[in-house]
Length: 81
Image 1 (cartoon, one colour):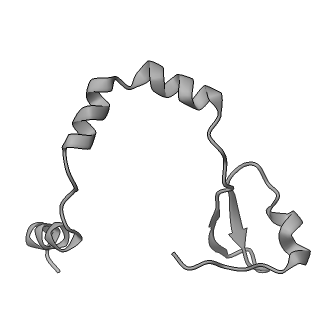
Image 2 (cartoon, rainbow, N blue to C red; image 1 turned 120 degrees about the vertical axis):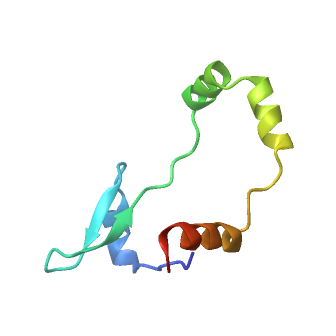
């Protein structure tokens, strides 16, 4: 992902706490901005109550996913170019 550097004068505009649409002056959506958020104690509590150690171990043992080229080839064979 390429970074976008904004001028210091606009930093306060990006001081939002919720995701927001980024639009040009004509109202056309250019993209979406999601502010960075640090994990909280509540996040850890949720994870510990909803994800079992067995699920974590299975995920770690499952290895990497399929290569993108293989996935794209499967999609093309099912749905065309």
